[in-house]
Image 1 (cartoon, rainbow, N blue to C red):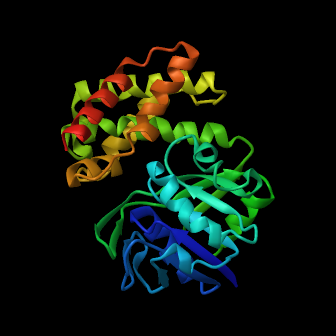
Image 2 (cartoon, rainbow, N blue to C red; image 1 turned 90 degrees about the horizontal axis):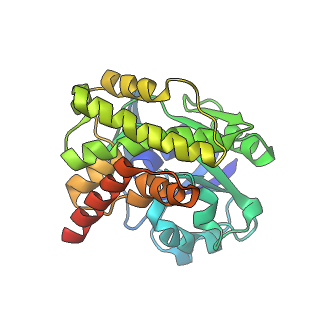
Image 3 (cartoon, one colour; image 1 turned 30 degrees about the vertical axis):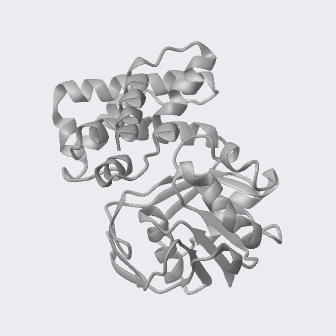
Length: 292
């Protein structure tokens, strides 16, 4: 039985923790800011009610076999407060976050050999602290190495699709292409149905092309027609779907601006690649955040 601690039981973290709990093979502990009575997750496969242990004070943390970090990308320091106790005996630390800088965010807190970057794609919305709606299949990708294969094994017997790849860099950049376009919904405060508008569809594709240009300069490889595929996937999604940066802006919470769009602008500058659409989106969201 693996001892697994999940730091950050939000929408995605809650879904992952609930599925791990259903295996009956793990002892799952949630590391949260406040007590939780349990997790109730509506999934495409039915409802799950899970009651893992909950810790609210990093001083209570003791060594586990695996640490899964599912906090927002901007809260690495907050997550790191838990890692001193949880990973004290060398446990792998899987980073389930948006963006392409998983290792960079935690390099100051965890030895590089313990870090396991994870590309996570799990459409989910938290309706209150203990209730989550999983909108579609949960999928994760990790590097094809010993720790990556160990991470895959944790999810055996669940419908969570976890696979290995020899090219994780391309996998996280492809996910960033999708995430970068979500800023349009955040700016408009409109759900996925907005993407049926032709002008907004063209804007989505332009933002994705900027992301691809920077990703290629970083060494990522993309399939042909990716902007069109992302637009098609958004138009096929439930029309009332709300992505995480949209939900955060609507609720007045901090947003993952840098991890989703700022990184494209930053790295674009380093490579001399113009990213005007992403740059405008970052400027607008940051101005709105300052206004809050």
